[in-house]
Image (cartoon, rainbow, N blue to C red; front, side, top):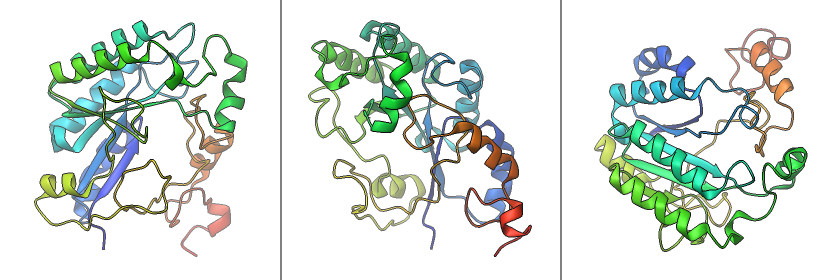
Amino acid sequence: DVEAIVFWTKDPGPFLPLLDRLEGLGYDRYVFLYTLNPYPPFLEPGLPPLEERIGAFHALADRIGPARVTWRYDPILFGKDFPPAWHLERFAFLARALEGAADRVIVSLLDLYRKTLRRLAPLAGRVSLEDPAAREDLGGLLEGLAREAQRRGMAIQACAEEGRLLPWIPDGPCIEAARLERIFQRPMAGRRHKGQRKACLCDYSLDIGVNGTCGHGCVYCYATADPEKARRLALAQDPDAPVLGRTLDETGGGLR
């Protein structure tokens, strides 16, 4: 049985008109984890303008309530163009813009996966390829983020940071059965997800996403190696296929 659905997104705009259909099918227990970063297009080239994404955040919150739309400021990366002062200013701008539309914000530092390092290498200098947790000035940034979140009525937590952001920002689960119970007023089967990395505190969920199917082209992405191929897959996706990445040619136009 599906107890709840957690949608992870950077651009829910195209999905908003389909929420009535989703609920009509009986799937009315859903929440969003909405990544909203202020990075320029050379890092996140496939996304709509920031103001449009802020508007979509408010549209979601107006429809389903702030508790069901969590803001993610993720990943935090540094470099010549992105010093801590830049993050403080842009985080404060977004927190003001989302005040009243979100009651929780989740942050995490850039993870230096090999695929991520390879894709960021041409931007060395503009983007730092050093471990962000090793910065001596990180504490001041974290304190500023925590204070700004509190000022805007948001709880702040870290995603899979193993306590590296303490004492300012504690780790917490992104998918939490207890939170879903409070939102939907029904019991949820909360248990640790043993298949996730050790640092992950999320309760068990079944991921229906597929690596290599997002065409946003974010340069720091670890899940999609070829955004252009992902965009071609999206255009050819069979809407009746049970999984992402299956084209009409592969399925013959229906379920197999």
